[in-house]
Image 1 (cartoon, rainbow, N blue to C red):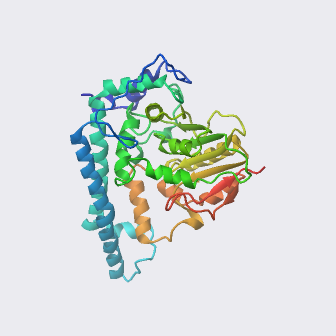
Image 2 (spheres, helix red, strand yellow):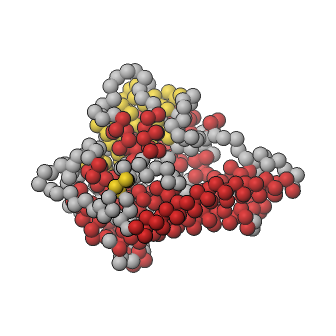
Length: 398
């Protein structure tokens, strides 16, 4: 078994190992009819979902998904009621907002409220660990699967192992061990681990299909020829966009080489003609005025304010006049839900315990105004792409 402590224990080891794995890969891997895709599929599929390779692993993940639903529903409700009671004892209204300096001394030693946090964090840690342990223990066969897909099609893959990785992208997002850039199996780990996050409701990419159906398109009536998904991770929304626009050239880019490598492997398995590339959202390398539609999903709260500005500016550069920029993320500014003490606590909890170093910083900005500042014409009256996400579009002036 590969031991994470020895193999992935330092950033230097991680960088060296991942780079060595990617050395020699084609920058634009094309379908090669002489190359056989070595699909590892031990327990069949359920719709689009390739089932977890071992029954005991699937059973454990099913349990953790059920426990997460209990935490998010029952424990969270109890914590919310407890906070309301604590505020009432102090003569405060339950829907009143408090600063963190006022709030944290009230809750930091409360067993019920912090117990809900502990349950949520432990569930997340166990979810990642179980999946990561399995793929590390079977590293050879899954590495061979990705290697066989690298130069297979449909679609293409571009890996850039010598690319300078910005420091802000190296954190363990969602406390995923190794993050998106530091574990060669990050794509497998993320794909299966995130199924837990959706509470068992997204095994067949139903969430991404629903989001894709609500993506706003250019209003000038011109055909959609090229689409870009910024920060595509494992490509679930990228594939959904290809399904909606089958004749468009669809790209997904992400700083995480292991993420796009898995996405391409899954695309080969699904027979989806989608292009994936390891590139920076703030430096995409695409030409000016290239895309008709640029989307992103829950990416902007994962980056610094400086990176947000750079990414929006880059999106405007590579979008054609009249094209649509549709960043789907938590609602902020005038679109944000009413601020309450519990909402402040929930955002702080996400920031503090879930590998979200810029979550509070993002929440403090008016994202719609930020998009407008970069020269887009904005519309904030659209239907959200998903509840609480994506009610802003930017249109590049003609």
